[in-house]
Length: 467
Image 1 (cartoon, rainbow, N blue to C red):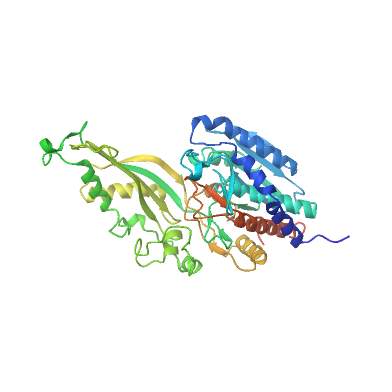
Image 2 (cartoon, one colour):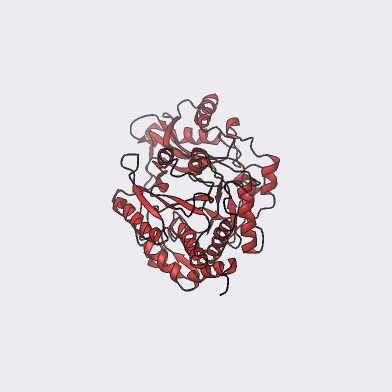
């Protein structure tokens, strides 16, 4: 009888894509309209957990759906598959909620909740964020089990249905169930690869703080002919105030918003990383910090963005001076930026430039704090070595994702080294019409994760913790 090998596990994982089994499973998940941003989506959030329970139980997991500790927030699921308490235990994660489907805005009349395969792309809401990604990981786990008959390590899972609305209750759940979630390492998938044809690892994420700047001068609008030159224009005041936050090329001017954590080691990790992507927009190389590379700007620095601005009636402009103006703003920030100091620093900055009348309002607050694991940490090295063997070359390694994730729950509350292996790419149109996954990338991700799971099972009996 032939001894089954790592190569057999990789082949079994790829076969699930080649035979259409992966696409059929993903289609069933995409068909559940689990929109956490819409109140009418609530029944489907629980239905998604029910669908995942069936898949996990078929793999030998014990599953428990728990109510969210935040009133009104959707439930979560905890699951585990324990082969031997003496073995390494991996905690993994996924979120089954999605953003608005935006029906009617997809190309060629596509239904966002019907998976459609066209020219190597799997279109559907959640195909990239995050249904397809956690399905890759579970399918690869299933492939390893089918070949080896066991994993050789333990798996715990926390599954949420509210990531797209800021993960309410996730942190509280982790604190309350800390013992149940105890593990040696956290490995999961979200976000994009740096380049679609090469695996990526990242070990943290930038934080995000949303806020609104507002100028409220008077009730209603007034005729621009009768009152122009007599009434202060809130839109002009707000535009001038915003222009002091950065210079003309977007370089941040608030000292407290300029991080000091872009160390030589982090710069070395980011050196020469290819950040251009053929399928995405062209990078504006004369935008952002002048003395940083594009990769350093995206992964090692803070970025300020004006997400939306309103004054008057943009859809039907009137000959009137508006009474109010607003701008929805966001700061993405790296480790080394004190999130509690961001808005106080902005207040001082605006006041010092004569903009005391510009009000700072909560625009959703702190989304996620910033986290980062040293790329030279033992668990990072382990994952890099495994993926290098599978891919035939080293992956791109990022200290942190440019976007934001609830990684602080795992890194800080649970105290775990965190490794993320994304299975999407930056031009996937997540959160927009025509969200899609690449079939070739999914196949590659299945092989990468099967190799990583296999290598975890090859660790010596009784080996726990970092290697």
